[in-house]
Image (cartoon, rainbow, N blue to C red; front, side, top):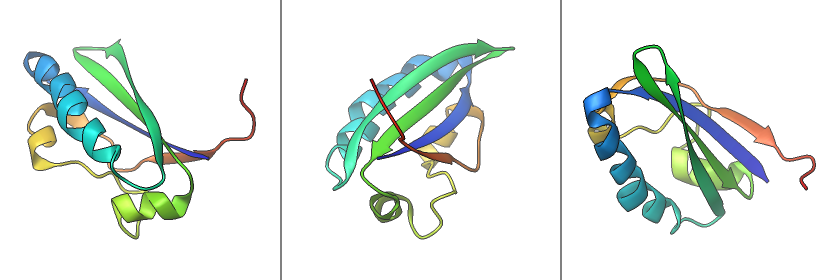
Length: 101
């Protein structure tokens, strides 16, 4: 299993819209993709903006490539989402699962 980690800072006035967008559009779409195993939405306060860490789980880097394109290290961020953001990471981090309890 591969986990894909990505974060962004959201404009405070857009925070509710962003969470709704993730829950109603992004997660349902990802759930239709082969190799997608699930995701978590994590939040913390960082300075003036709430930061969100999105961790998705995939069966392999090949299944991530089907979602993200050839260069899996780059973030996939729609224009709609970008309009709600103060800033976002251009790159993502991938980790192989070694053990879990």
